[in-house]
Image (cartoon, rainbow, N blue to C red; front, top):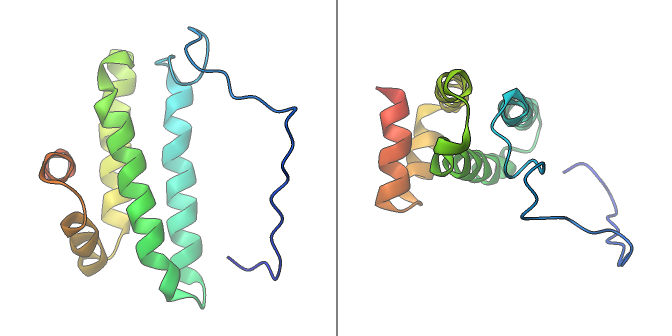
Length: 120
């Protein structure tokens, strides 16, 4: 957001492994909760910056990441499910209501309902 230049390296030596039982996409332990701290930090950074034009993008990405984890909720351990719901709610409450409402209107009804349920 603050960079004057950005470089995308076309490195073909880096691979993302999917479908492996020990990968982060499959585990259900506390490591999944790290996304919540990252989203809180992202939102705090954008809201405290002199660049409010980036807030809606940060909101959209935050909503998408919370929905991603709620869609895969069954893979989480029971106590992690509880913490994910609580932390997801905390992230949603950090977003100014008008911006949160605008973000909700930009997503489909199924995901909107999932997020609204967190706020109840």
